Image (cartoon, rainbow, N blue to C red; front, top):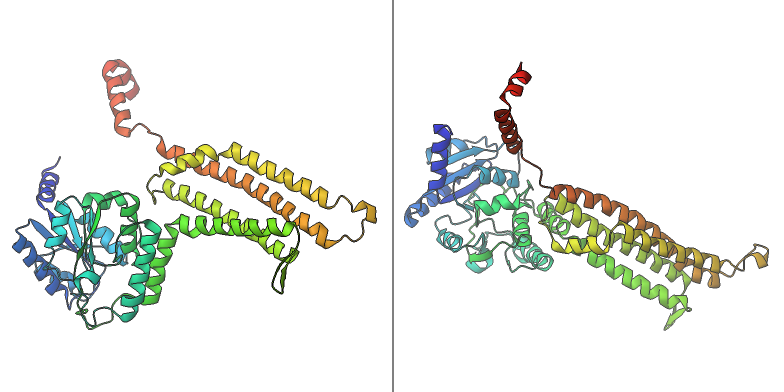
Length: 426
């Protein structure tokens, strides 16, 4: 270890708290935020640092940060999430509290966050609705629609108790942030952190915090509809259960009930009659539902393989009950049943000289038969694709020997056979 590396490691170990602020042209408010954070560190008697993750400022923000005693980490990749990812990587503290550099969050009130972190919580979220939102601090669209709705969706999808998913003032341990392997570069970073912490079973809590009006004279970087959609899109993509599985099951059940009922004859409700035309659409509903269910399984395994989701023991059960062989058998049985139904539906065709058939009778059998054939083929193809995904999963789980182990073995072999080593080197 070089002296510089040793000194850097000692410095990192001595810092308990990093106050991290993403920055892109925040010259108007940056000095105020840094001074508040440094004063809070002094008042708490904490060994800490203020770190500015600069995202390419051109208004002198870097110089202001250095003049105020903060450390600056230049982050070349643009985006809110990218700046915070770079800042987390550069942070020296055991704990990190992040907050926007627009003077909307109170950096003099960080004690509750640090206390919860010291208690063992791995993610401490601020809750602006409990702490207080000053007049003009949050647009009505965000206050009464955006934040409550997106937070409610997040609680429903991921079964947590976080009431303010998008509060920008939050604390976490650096170790937990590294385990989460956060990847998004935009505003959806705020949602990703909460979602991954929940999926990984981290210890999460909330503390009240306040929100004040933005101290800048220019408009904020946030774009309501665009960034709101990005948050919602992220929540959906990280929940295959709600995006694919539950809608797919509902479609399959509804379609199967309709096809089964209409197989025995038309259904009349009041003056409305449902017949083979409705049966055809119900069949399509079954097929679409099955595709959605398989998308849910495939998406979950792919996300686990890529490290987007933590490992899920439930997927091992899926592999045990639904593998290539069982899928091919089930698909083959459905395909054969569909063929038998098709033959049955057209068995009397020859007696008519291969002319017209009664659609009321034929389609009532043909539609379920074609549905079974289609599902059988889809089941077989999905089984092969699922097997490919499981191959990738098995490869990821292999424990390959490290390069250092190979080097150690080579050195050991060289020590035992010095003559061979000399001959090889010459």
